[in-house]
Length: 97
Image 1 (cartoon, one colour):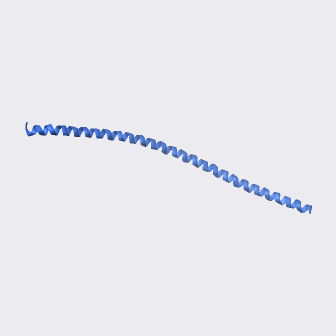
Image 2 (cartoon, helix red, strand yellow; image 1 turned 90 degrees about the horizontal axis):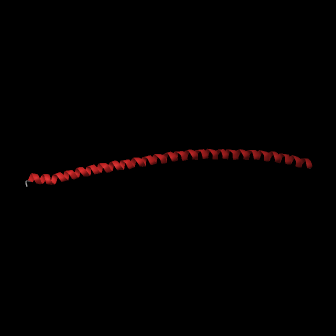
Image 3 (cartoon, one colour; image 1 turned 90 degrees about the vertical axis):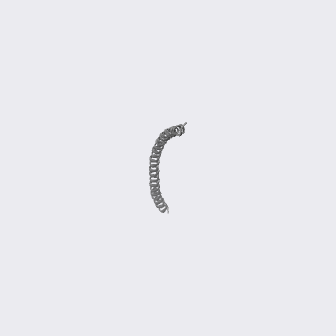
């Protein structure tokens, strides 16, 4: 057996193994990329759900603001009614004296 035969006997399997490992790594990288894309899809879904929740929260904030405005309006109206009733009661009390 000559040196060239030994070089081929050792070199060819090493190169074949390197090629197979390279193909395996490329396949694994493609699989990881596919999983990555799925996770990106899930992240986009969660982002859209978060956007919906933000819209709902904004609507509830608007409703809360309206309730606060109505509460303030009722307080002002009731205060005005109280002042009118107080004035009438004072007037009635002054007439009785």
